[in-house]
Structure formats: structure tokens, C-alpha cells
Length: 111
Image (cartoon, rainbow, N blue to C red):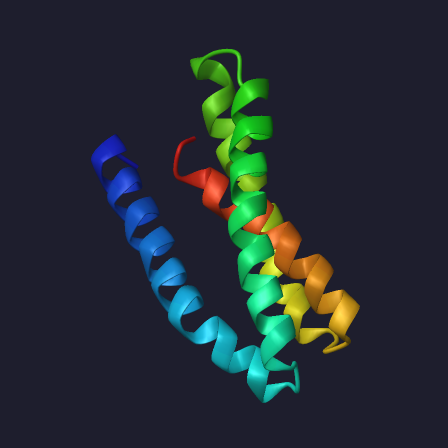
């Protein structure tokens, strides 16, 4: 696949998922019975952990040869994290997966 097609597909998929995730995440959490206070805490903690994810993952990339394997790994891990939301609606499971997804998925953009 040519580089232009690969990048176009990647950015299109990234913003499609992010565009669906951000506005509707709090509504989905409310629908599974999470309180408004906990939703606010989850959204705030998710924003804070994004910084840590970018700093930690980007600090481990030492050269251009690491970019594609790291992108593939982060894509697979973020897919698994998002699929994990369908396994259980337990509050602490949702907290853990929210933090994990917000640690992994936004890190794909700078990579």
C-alpha cells in the first residue's frame, strides 16, 4: 500500500473513532448506570493520563525503525481496550479500561 493511502486510512480511522468516542462517551457511561460525579472523574482522569501516555511511549522510541512496530502494537492494544468495554459494566472495570484506553489511543497520533 502506498504511503499516502496508508496515512489517509490511518488518519481517517483515527479521527472517526475519536470523533465518535469523545462526544458520546459520557452518554454511554450514563446509560450503563455510572453517576454524573464518576463520569466527570473518568473524563478528567482520562485527560490527565493522556499526557503520561505520550511522554512514556514517545520516550521509548529511539529511531524511525521503531515507528511502525509501535504504531501496530498501540493500534492492537487500543482495539483490545475498546472491545473490553463490552465485557463488563462494573465501575472499577470501566475505570481501568478508561485509563488504559486514554493512555494508549491518543499516543497513536504523535507516533
